[in-house]
Length: 523
Image 1 (cartoon, helix red, strand yellow):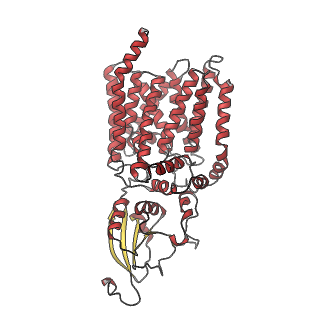
Image 2 (spheres, rainbow, N blue to C red):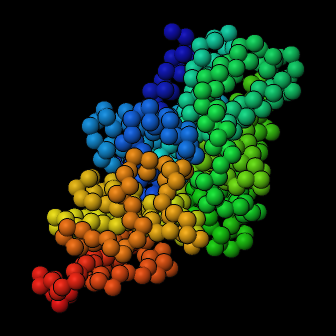
Image 3 (cartoon, rainbow, N blue to C red):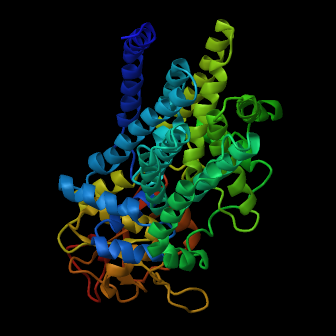
């Protein structure tokens, strides 16, 4: 063994404990309080959707806003473990999140140094948006893993373009990414711009863009995604599921950086403080991009994978609002890798340590926001206090045979169905609209999982509604319940109300024409 290889092996052995500690930290942060937070509306949607068959998930996903791969995999996980418990459903995302940290470290090592790899791993392990969506029954962590791995495959191919196997892996990962989330297209665009950049920078030397293998790989990606193109086109012409996304402003991009690191838009901060973190991140990323003089410019690729999705989504959002930070999960991962490369270039040891500590301090603030439930990632207007799990437990304790529960809207309905586990009768309140149209869900967008529920699930009017036990529970979002001013039938008697967080649970007794002696309130 040569001296160079011996020293390299020694250095790897010396760094192994640090790698293990970083991975251990990533595991601990993603498993901490994994099931302590109630499922929110999007998670409840996914948990309801995966109860469909594989063929139905594929077919009905066309009525959703996302492609089907995540839900297909989640159903396989559910069947494999024989349970839809949050330990397993969120645990799957946690495993994916830890793998994402490892992939980020691998990428940083490939494009920079071992020290940069360790810095990237530490920052990724504690990155609040990464921890947040590694505890979420949604597709964002999976998207990040697939696209980071695809970027690694691209770096490998650029370094050794004779090995077509790298491109085969790249094709499979990119196709999987596109079937997981449509924003994978921004990753593909970043890769194309990188390949074009290499040609522009050193014509004739880095002519990857002219390589037949590159074109065949991308044709293969298109062909493999082609079966889903009709569904994508159909979704693009409908806006049922994206109407909630706000229009972009001059604060959208800088606030996205704050959300990556703190899970808050930071708009309450003073002007100089607000612009400080985004400015440091963008200047550092630009410095990494322009200072990469290496032949293959791999560091520039990582910078592009941050720039292109964020700026591309921002510009498109002027036409159709799509700018949502969790959709940019991959960009957040790439930003951390780029920042690790930038920090690694600092020659002064004291300044390097101070820089790392400052970033970690910001991340700790974000983790505090996460674990204390003080984030606006679910609801951009205010932090959510979701206690529906506690209310459903109270309902479980208080209900008797013959009771029914009416959920105020779909957001509550899916979560109530999940926690009830089919033990009782959960119904959806669907009063007519103001113009007299049916208030029942149309089976598209967020209401798509309702396709399997029978007519008896819907309560269009409270008049004449009854249950065998003449008791009705109502669960609703408190603010919406206050605004709705529902007119209850004259023979409904209010018995009980409890509020936990943003939700309320109420119990009513339905009185018959004659006094019912077993219900004192009806006498």
